[in-house]
Every structure is written in C-alpha cells, then in structure tokens.
Image (cartoon, rainbow, N blue to C red; front, top):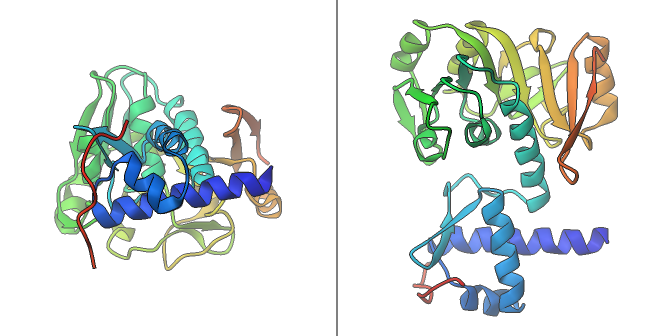
Length: 275
C-alpha cells in the first residue's frame, strides 16, 4: 500500500513538473507522457485541483501558483489540513497577519469568520478564493518573483503602523536550537515584525519543517503560542517543544481530524480540453 501511494505521489509530482515546463496541458498528453490511462490522469488532476495546486480553465489544466507548487500529494494533504485547522482559529472581527507561506495562504479560503482583515506580504493572496466579508490588505513593498513576496522598508513601515490579534506564519524550519527560520533573507525582517506586532503567534509547519534550521532566524520557539503540524512530525522534536511549554495541535490529514497536545528547451504541448 505504501509503495502504491509513493508511486501516485511520484506521478502527480511529474504532472506538476510538466505543467511548470509547458504552462498548460491536456489529459491525452499527460497520459502518453506518463504511460497511464486518461482515467488515471483525470483522477490525479481532480486530486491536485482539490488541494489547490492546479486549476482548470478554458479546457486547460495549469498550476494555480506557478513556481511554488512542487509538493507531493501527501504533503499537500498535510498543508491543507493544517490550513483548515488554522482557519478555524480565526474569529469575527479579527485582524491577522499572514506571511508568504503557501500553507498560511491556503488558510484564506477556509476562513468562515466574518469581517476579518488579512494583512499579508503575499501578492498571491489576490488570487485566492475567500469569504466575501474578508478584507485583504497588502503590505506593499518590493516584489520578489516568482513567489510574489513583498519586502523592504515600504513593507516594514506599513506593518509598523498596525497591530494584529493573531499572526499565522509559515517557516522554512522550526527547531529548539534555531527557532523560527526562513530561507529568504529579504523576508526575515517582515516575518519578525509580524511576529512582534501580534498578540497571539500561530506557526503552521508540516512535517518537513520540524527539527529543521534554515538560514535566517526571525523568531524564538519559546514565544510561539501554538504550533500546528501533522501527526507524522518527528516525535522527538515535538517532545522538546512540549518541554518548553509550547502548545501543539496535531492534524491527521487522511481523516481530516485533529488531536491536541497541550503544553506539551521547451516545445508547444498539444492543446484541447482536459476532460
């Protein structure tokens, strides 16, 4: 069973790579390239669409966020479950910070609370479906492509003028020794200021980030109010976090339930419809 799941993940990753290469493709092209049936490809595309990796428009399949979707389907299930849990923590009238994390960005389409203000340096927030009562405020600043993150003095000045009830921040790594870290030095000051200007600090990190230390530190592990991760995160690292007094929420993507631990060279692809 595990081998079968790994094979599916590998095939769906290959679909993502082909979409990154060609921009848009149809079912017959993918089926031929990957040597599987069109029905199998349609199932793969359905799964990728459900996890908000691809979109289908005008009879074509394409990446929702080109350049940032190189995740296996199992990892996307983790990220989606984490985002759903985080969204449930947002209350009516909240003002929240969201950074450039793909997991944090996914939150927006699951927020059901009313009259929420999202302040973010993620330009892709403009493309994300969301509750019609939700207000999106971009920090502005210099734009880093293809991630569409905003940074620099302009962004920092705008963030410095507001305070948030909560921040929901992703990271490249979270460890006891390294704290909260990012791989992009331009984003470090923005992440740090969002952290400082929030009353409550929520960190969203799937199992691939736990116990990892990346290049640039922007927050201390002991100042995190709640870590939301999935149940396959390294238990030895989670135990260290619990000893620090960190609260941890473990999500189970396959069941979409949660358990809580307190204190503890490019060619043109064939055109046509994908279905």
